[in-house]
Amino acid sequence: MKYIYTRNDLDLISWERMDKFIDKIYSDVSNFLKENRLEIKYIVPIMRGGGIPAIKLSHMFQVIEILPVQLKTTENGEDRDILMDLSCVKNKKLSQKECILLVEGNHVTGYSANKAVNLIQNQFGKDANIIYISITRDYSYRDSVSNVIYTT
Image 1 (tube, helix red, strand yellow):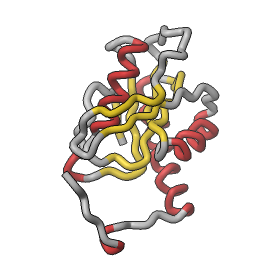
Image 2 (image 1 turned 45 degrees about the horizontal axis):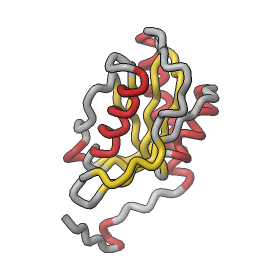
Image 3 (image 1 turned 180 degrees about the vertical axis):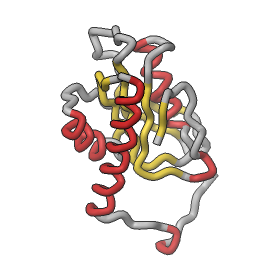
Image 4 (image 1 turned 90 degrees about the vertical axis):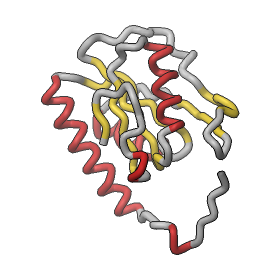
């Protein structure tokens, strides 16, 4: 499927607006963590768009360990390449109170996010607690990511 966009189809996001989105996500996730007595062990940005929000959230949550993944897909959603995965992680154990924050910039169909969830589960186990956030989301695919305990 080939997408054809015009400038009128785009919603340009300023840095000030990006900060507001990240602040809202931080508040939502913080509340969820407190309510469920969880803490973030790792932040996993889906590169490229997840990099900047992941860095900012790492400072806000005071989480040092960032484990980036980078995926490439074709226009019809088929795998092309996994450029960075989580195979570098030596300690594969998460306690029940630890979770992973999966960060994406622009969620379209959820295909990349689901692929990243699979990478996390392959590395840390099927019962890994994963919180998925994205800065923007295509509304028709807003609930398309599976096997996460919370999303915003």
